[in-house]
Length: 409
Image (cartoon, rainbow, N blue to C red; front, side, top):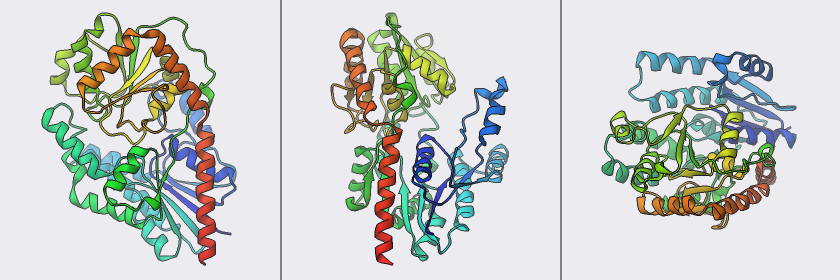
């Protein structure tokens, strides 16, 4: 029986639902990943208060498919980062991804019909799959690197030293980019989450016939959660607090508008902005570290709006999370939401434009009734596109590809 091999060194929620789509469709094969907890391990770890907040990996609950977990690549990455083996965190992650990729490469067999791989983690398995006549499906959740390079070059020139993680020079190392271009070239189908990502691929010369836009889904269990009745006068930003997410521009505009006099800005996530930059904004915002998902849901339900002035996101999952809670969304056109929501369902504005960001914030803060109505419209939109919808579309893409590979054999 033909098998489908899914390679994902890391397992964010989108990778989980790709695997669930395969499992529900009864597609035999396996998932090759790094360490993720079993349901029992996850339950036990959550019982330890010191571990609950930092537990970022969720178990994958499958009925038919097999999960192959590899613990050593995780351990080796941590050890190498501690010893300073790599010049950059990005390069340490790449080495970790490649080790999982090598494990997956050995799983390709004559029965393997399709290999699904995540960017920077499937070059070797794609090579072997192509030699053996299997199709390659490339999961690209981020914008093409040529577009990203242009954006970060201009932003770095305007804000030098604001955020080291955003402007890591090793991100665009020539060898690293050659590897990614090889993955793209080997792919028969490229799954991407937004029209924005698709356009960056087209701009780079990728054949549009190979590109499949599959937006991320909404949080089904959050759709009916009741929102706070009264305004909390709180605007929330969720994710890595970095220049790539536009957090530096948000702080600038928040101060410029004097919004801190009437509203609270809550930043939730790991802080990446430099201490020297943050000095000018002390006392103008509240910061909380990354939170468990159920705690994050409660924040969305109480917030007046989510704001995300991202420089370049494939499709920011926080947008779907916020919309699932009926939280109004103010986001840049480079957040991935363009093409998914209308003007009535979210307020989108030009990226890398403080005036556009200020206009969106001023409108949201001064028009609470219209803002709340937009949040309700956004919630109705995501009720139409849940993770189940995402899984259905993934299953259809796979069935089409299986039929095509069967007819060609």
